[in-house]
Length: 314
Image 1 (tube, rainbow, N blue to C red):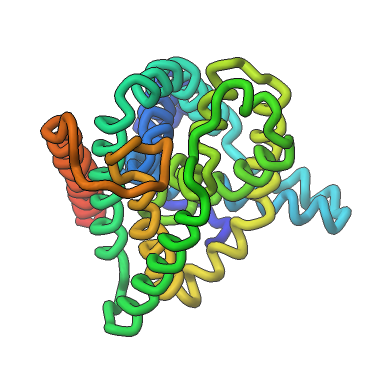
Image 2: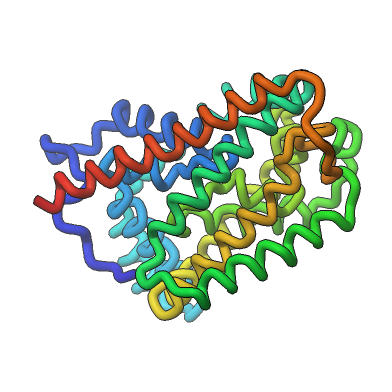
């Protein structure tokens, strides 16, 4: 990743930032990001703004590094290079989607746990297939890396019986758990094929963060956002270096984590509320149909993204 401005990608034809259009883009990205398995980065790719978004993140992160070196002049120069109207308009849209849609999603998780688990199961399977396409040189070694990572994470998840937290448990959750969740989940913005909500599922913090949003736990949300900001500044360069130098191994390990996480997303017996596994029972058809729909959605969004990238490359 570098600080040079991308050539024309993501710019509006008029040369202006067009904040209203950017808010709409952000809303679409935020809508995707609150659903595990659907990457906001993939939506950004479809909308033609991914490269510019990555550039803005890199520029902002480099300003933080300059500040750590106490180079105030370089810090100011890099901050001035960030397209703030463009970025803030995008963040407004993302925030609006989270605030407006997290409530209905939390109710569905509580009222239809098996159906929603089926949907998320299909989304994650789709994310696995999409992510494997991003492996540059597939090999048996990478398959082993993915399977071992998946098995270890599958067994790790089985160490606890439940992933569910009530509203009261959310309120007493230690603040540092929200800070760490934000710091790690935000890295999904620069990881191909991985969504921030999926990272929260991996960490066992998805329902907790969703509950904090709906309960308007401002203190916890500010801690979560602080974790996001500091995590992105601290890890963006490292993750970029890992992807540049060990791309396929890192991606294979991430795919393994997704495979292992399917233990949480298996609809039976209790959906996302439990890591227990049971044979399908009760309303089987709806979870299965939603799983197929989730798989089709991810593959469809990926196909649109690849088509848009192909058109821009011509």
